[in-house]
Length: 327
Image (tube, rainbow, N blue to C red; front, side, top):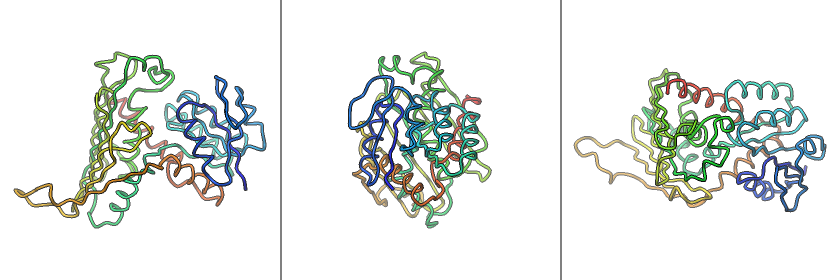
């Protein structure tokens, strides 16, 4: 079957999704919908209903500002389309529950969310190592994810709570929280501080959060947009070793090289040194393409969307709400 897609929103992510779709065999982009006219090998429209009402289109990619996502997802599902949406699919858990309701009304339609960090090669390899069991259980996680913005940020939809739903936590920290949940499944207890000490917007520019689950596993998050030098650092310390990922391959190239250090056995004090590590470097980022391929495969095989689905989205959104409530 040849899949024909419509893309709603043609900013940075819409363009990335166009390239992803066109790189996959038996897939092509039929429509692009945006408020600004766009040119390319597709039909342009300003009206989403033109896409929803076209029976020739079977997949819709929602790449719009956060506040628009929920309604477009539901309209897509209710029109019988498979829907892929960039994160977050809604700005609160109530909206995601509405989306889950639309899924239940349309059991033949697949829905997936763009938590592309799950598809980075370092994360896939780390998950394989953790699941092997040779390191024992995870004791604690630590994640730092930060970037710098300039005054042009003030003019974007991400700088306004009404459009974004939140600040840096909703924009970027959500990815780190999703990874925490990918490895530890849940966190019930939350202590957090949110601040807007520098940019003074109606959204936070820093979040410090400590999370704990019923198994005693603790995760520490710092999500920031006053990190003047971009950073991605994800650490997992287990009973018999650790995995540390520093840097992340992205289209902007601003997070440096994607490298992972692994130690199978902990060294005994006072001789705990850094020389007993294996180090791995990852040179390719195909995370955006791989999640689209995964989505298409679920459609073609009529398999459930096993990762980055609506249940995962609800988990991470409920965790975000706990952080905002605490902070």
